[in-house]
Image 1: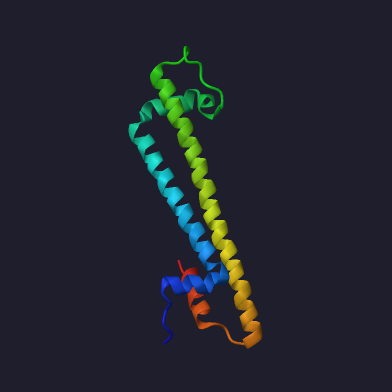
Image 2 (image 1 turned 90 degrees about the vertical axis):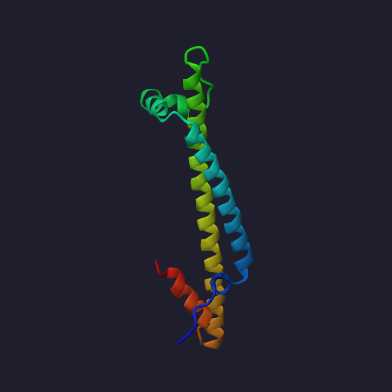
Length: 141
């Protein structure tokens, strides 16, 4: 019975020569996601959810505008909530972008690894056992 490779061996087999740059890109992306997630948690913990709901229902343009809201027309708590909602919207977009970067780095690494595996198989006629095990392990839910 073949052994299942450890995570490092599996990644090296899947990503080939792109292994290190893929691992670093994924680590950097995960760190960014953690920082942004912490900022979102802090925003949500201090936010008046009921007021935020009213702002989003009655004046969503305040949140999605780049212009500063009229300081005289709106009470301070509304202005503070609008600023928090703006930051929350930007963080949500940033999370999506960073998740996309991680996915693209992973996809690129897998394509490089697949190309290198294909070249090895073409030359030797045999499939690399670690690559096969890694592909099977990574493709399972």
